Length: 448
Image 1: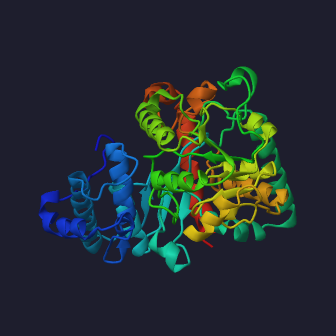
Image 2: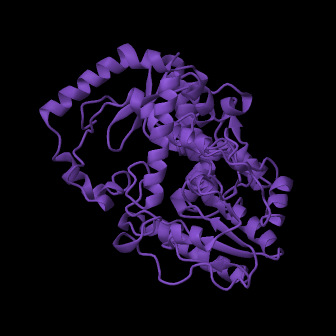
């Protein structure tokens, strides 16, 4: 409203949906039940799940928690208000920033169901728009809009449509980006103030061996995620959340004859992440007590040193380490849909039984890794869309920011005044030209 926009979509009083919410709440027997909650064919359960975790800073859902019931009521109010709005209003386009939670995630799904053109605003070194497409399979149609921006399941198909020259140039860009990332240089594609591959002054890594006390046994590494931050950001997971995942994994791991090492999420230094860091730290302390045979290493441990010390395999759910460590020849096992799902340089467990087999045989996993495919992935994930649909400018000037500030653009509002000082009439005119070109040329290009 402060920018002169009319607010026409407003939520009802959630109390109006107390009875329906109570019925859903009482029907939940296991955590997967919540993830399957739909309303008129629209999946809302995963958005409720992630909102509950984030709002209350919890690592897993408690199906008896009255606060969960409150969020279910809120989700129903959002759904019904959106439904009535769409029944009486012809929407020709929908713009969304972050569809991870119920506040915009439910409406995003409803827009897809109505075939309304949906655009994601991408922020970073430059501003750009991306048209989100309803996916083709029944599974993807059920969960078409998540917190991910790119249609990662289309990467190989989109790359195959490029000319030979474009493919060659793309592979080269991917290779250079990977080499730069693994060298420890600041990576603009990953929002982290310091690289986990950095050496010297650009690292907080502890001195000495990282993977000590293994007594000659095979060394297996597990990379953790932020426990409360949107575990269902991709189409599906083997486990209800990150806490359930790591608990299952370490229960199985302790029964193997291997040395298991767990590294927390490395982005722990940002002041804007105090709450997330506190939750992560408490969970890790609990895990240490629960699994005394497992070694927990610092989140600041240097990845290059880990690679030099040698590991037999790596386990993650959907981390960027899946392609980074694979590029260095390490077998990586994912535990759900992830950006690399359409490539075979990782293992992608489809069932709990298959995942168990990977854990039990973590010392002898063999996978043929084509580094060119990883370079292709890097190009598609970090360059392809921005090259075609980017504005070539930022709404704000980031040239004066430090590397740490650049890593906090999307998470730290304290640097907004500094960013806003970079806005100029020329930049605004450039963006106006970009939007005009986008809808006259680029939108039709990506919609083919």
